[in-house]
Length: 400
Image 1 (cartoon, rainbow, N blue to C red):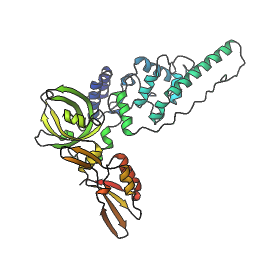
Image 2: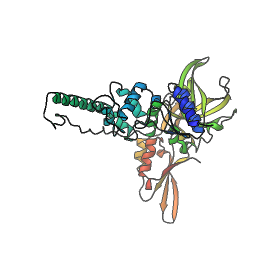
Image 3: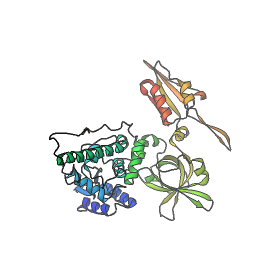
Image 4: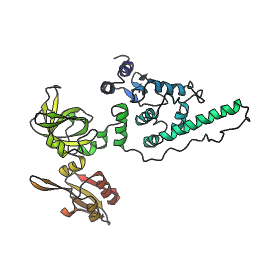
């Protein structure tokens, strides 16, 4: 196709208010080898812009909560056409405070700036989006103080005040950003999705893919119709509950980057797994793939659901912990992360992962299997604690 980037830019600009259509176009463009430059307040415009025939600059107008008026004000300030005392300053913004000071705030509100931050449009200025978001109020206060200061200066000039007076009691020094812990991958991508409508800079499945593929080996793209159940994993999207003929029914999509499949789960599963059956959560499932008469594709009918920690218990054999002259505080770790006990129709079930200590000595190695008193529930926090106490931080779950 000739003018591929121009074709997608035109179509994505037309559909920028329809997230579903925008996502399809975005994915189709990527399949054709087109690269997207992330949203950027220092480079972007309202529309999607072709950079080369294989690269596109993301349109700032496609970020939810912005709008043409706000984006035009940003571009005008960047190009030295802004309103107010900073209106003729030209060039890229140097910080969040500089941005709020120069952009006409009658056409830009805090919600718009927050949306731009969540979308990553300030990453070129500061990579810690959490700090930027926490500092929006401070940046608007700084900008208002600078404007009041400039107005006061103008009044002094009209009254014939002394030349060379600077600041009139207010500092032009930018304050520090509010110090905040950076978001993790999940938090960053979830905020990104609220601003853009889909994951742009990554996928929630990326973080767990390597571990999950050790027991949920079938990718969603490879699922075939079968009466035999298969173990699958993915991120929940578009979750909703409807009233079916036999009670409530959960309908959602499962996404592992390779494909997105329609899924259904009955009321019993909904009640048992409320904590994980929601958008942006990773689930591992045992399901049967059946034809979907509505979409013409496949629908997964779920039989069992696990979150990642429970899946580690179900599919993992044990946690291997390297020790070399210094044993971990097993009793303390088990006390902090005890196995989970569930009461079912079959009686009490204990969900926990066994532990083996891998002893290393010059010329000799052996593994020591601990008894059931060392069972623990393998959450991310639990694994991090075991790893911290292992020799050279070598601790891993053995699945095979």
